[in-house]
Length: 152
Image (cartoon, rainbow, N blue to C red; front, top):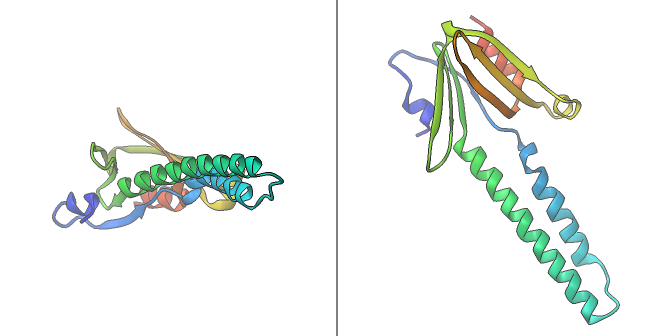
């Protein structure tokens, strides 16, 4: 059972669930692609082959580490918009959660780069009266999430 569905109040309806975009895996791709290139590179000597393989293994380990990190972030992050509030939770072992009632939401800001517009991801900042939820980065379909929050 997800955190968001666990904390729903009686009669509260979940309108939309936000997710982190897959773009977070870019560091893993940047490491794994050259690792594959090093493995496929022909070597003239056994010593050169060993160096290429060591470099490939190092890059592959870094790439897998980055991929696991992002996978944990995506798995441990939940964003829910209900008819009454916005709920944000991240963390797998240690948990951070923030909620804001819909009647307290004043502004929802979406920031997208050119690549973000092309791949449909961006950052959302929700500001309310007296407080704000931290900027949520690399959110999948941020415009739809903003529209769900601001539509009343």
